Length: 192
Image (cartoon, rainbow, N blue to C red; front, side):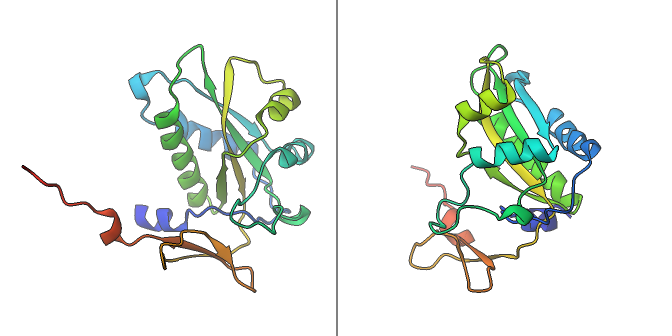
């Protein structure tokens, strides 16, 4: 059921570092994104899959993890993602990637959840380091990195209190994510 997939699709930041993801699974996830709706059907997104441990280790320090967790530098070695999908925008095919990026990234993560995996969209990227590291041509804009693996953390959705939307971890390292209530986000239309 879609609702179950959506509820299981959290921003996981700690993974079982011993559980690798086969390349075929990464290609299947990109295949889901390939057939997603595309603004003006420009299909300007490109995808780079990374699962080789050395390449994953090289990419890791180019990413900034969990901005609200000021005292956490990211997952320790044995809890790092075992794969990544880097989403690129081909400027030869288009210039506005936001809509396609959101649709594709969410679809990839829902597909990952269906496979018993989890992930995290990372937009805080040292882009020029990644470009140099993987020899990414200049016409490909680095849009987003999706970290993937088998999650080892528990994530709990809770209600926003005192308008504080900052996620946090408790003493058992359970990750708490405040979400606004349905009544706070629904707006009644006014006709004049």
